[in-house]
Amino acid sequence: MAPTRARSETQPRTRSQSRAQPQTQTQTQPRAKAQSQSQDAPVAFFSQAATFERLWPLIEARVHQVFDHGKFSHGGQVAEFEEQLRAYTGAGHVVGVNSGTDALVLLLRACGLRPGDGVLVPAYSFIATASSVVLAGGRPEFVDIDPVTYAMDPAALTAAVTPASRFVMPAHLFCRMADMGALASVAARHGLTLVEDSAEAIGMRQGGRHAGRHGAGGVLSFFPSKTLGALGDAGAVLTDDPRLARQVAALRHHGRPGRTLDNFPAISTASVLPGVNSKMDDLQAAVLLARLTCLDRDIARRAVLGEVYRRRLTGLPGITRLPLAPTSDRDTADVLYVYLIEAERRDALAAQLARRGIGTEVYYPVPLPLQPAFAGLGHRPGDFPHAEAAAGRALALPLYPDLTIQQVERVCAEIHAFCTSDAGGPP
Image (cartoon, rainbow, N blue to C red; front, side):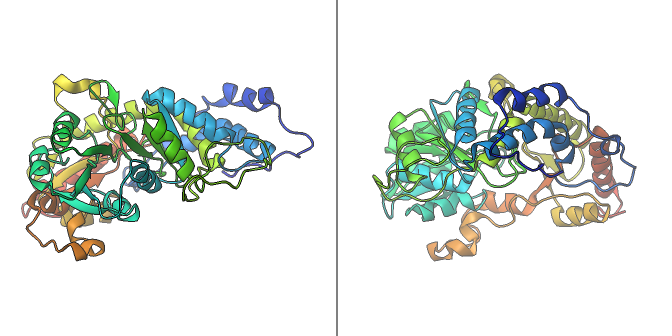
């Protein structure tokens, strides 16, 4: 469904007109075809068609506001999204940028990373966790993960600190945060600045504090498949430090501080430091504002679907699921970004599910130290055994709000068939 044409500049929508429609239509149910799935219909790894059909009136109204105002980046929708996200996360400051990767780069730069500074990062994560360090001018120093939680191991962190280390940047993956208390203790002991790659972690909390607020700052990614996804790339930096927030805000706009929200402002060309063009687009902010209204509901839906997976796959031979946080720390608001399992014959299982029309993803097939991009650091197979084991066994299953319980049951039935066949392979 595409946006309708914007109204004429001579007849802009009023604020009341643009908001009246969604208040009466956002409860529209998706078409029946989205709910009726045949037994053998494909199950996509990710889809948000029904979500966007339901939210379209609210998105459309906000898109009209963007066109009527005539400012398409760094404008009013972005400012409103930053404020609403600040309220949701409890962060002192939120700075919208054009991707989660840029958020990491700008956060490290704003924290004072110098050329060649060592940044301790997990050996198992998405490539941006380490490449952002290089892009900011630093040197990634890899740390093995805990084999149960897949998060940076505090004991391994202690052993990995070098004289060049100045930062530590754990990543929160899949369904739980890293142990921020233990990692913060190691960081303090060694005089390291703690920042968080919390790109996947919107809605996750530990000790009552939202992800991204346990050190100097953190980031969020709004890539379409994330728990809160845009229609393209977008990201944000979270921090409680006003000086750091001002620095990131200037860096995202060619080093220019502040924001002017008029249609065609006379922007000062004075830059206080060398920056980049990483402003968030207002069209993406418009989509995110609409999706933010149902974020908690979407998280709850993921939890329901995750429980179906847990119940059906527990005890299945050859399958292990990534555990949630301990019950004593359940104020963490565990968020299932994807449902991750360990499979003894991961690639064969993925191939069998694909033949049955079920999408999966490997998260992540090559540990960061063994990626060609970091070959110059000299790491070899066996240096990070737990990260290497995870890379060979981890498989992400479909998990998103549009998914039905019947579809999850079908995925589980196919996994059961694979794991319980006589040969331990496809029936």
